[in-house]
Amino acid sequence: MNTQRIQRIKTISEFHQLKGLPKPEHPLISVIDVGSVKRSPDDEPTNLIYDFYLIALKRNCNAKFRYGQQQYDFDEGVMFFIAPNQVFGIEPAKDEKSKQSGWMLLIHPDFLWNTPLAKSIRQYEYFSYLVHEALFLSEKEELTMHGIIRNIQQEYHANIDNFSQQIIIPQIETLLNYGERFYHRQFLTRKITNHQIVGRLEVLLEDYFNNNDLMQKGLPTVQFVANTLNVSSNYLSSLLKLLTGQSTQQHVHNKLIEKAKEKLSTTNLSVSEIAYELGFEHSQSFSKLFKAKTMQSPLEFRKAFN
Image 1 (spheres, rainbow, N blue to C red):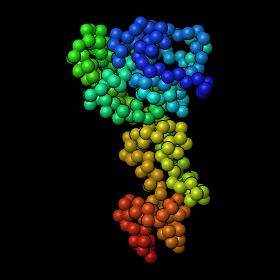
Image 2 (image 1 turned 180 degrees about the vertical axis):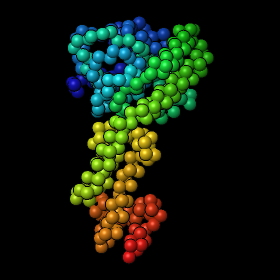
Image 3 (image 1 turned 90 degrees about the vertical axis):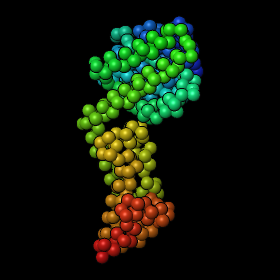
Image 4 (image 1 turned 90 degrees about the horizontal axis):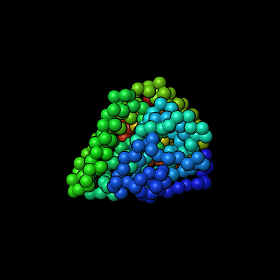
């Protein structure tokens, strides 16, 4: 993919113009029929940055995507969510086999101004992390999403007045809530893949803590773990919470405590030496974490084996 060309689209009107669409009926929100979007025959791979939210449901999406720094999987999913200021890479296929269908909902942050959703929208996990796969929808789920979009479209096609925002905002919130429900269902139903990630995490942490370079590198960060597993940090933590009830950082700390207990019970190393070997610059920080996790100080734990 060409990583040099980055195009920033600041307004919904600019997006409409770029895609060969009529001017939007409202400058801050728009529903677009994907089938009506024109694509230039000389389209090149490009990276885009939007200054607005884009929620899309597409079928026959014959292109390669990258959201952030990782490949975006469209093999089974049809729906995706893009937040403002995220780099979204697209590489159109050379031979378009079938016409795309579906819709796109564009929402400028200014449309949400002075509403609770303005603050809460980024709490939806598919906006706050670089999710690596499109959302798969059953036929019933897809109909639900279509119905919400029709309601939004119907309202802004009508005369815009003081009530329009109050009517449309709850519809957007409903769409987002369904999206979150369906993404969580997707995590749960793909148990084989998910458990493979958990297994790879265990191997990764075991190798990391057995590595003599731990004292130089320090504890593995959540970002390091996620990058090594080729998923985003929040995606990984969300997945682990669903499957194990614990975040990525808790898994790291659990492995740390396991190794600390092993050293305290089987070696004569001092607490300071153990802390150093486990990547702590100060033994007090290690002792504080150990006690928080075990309700015992390292020395109290060691005494139990003497």
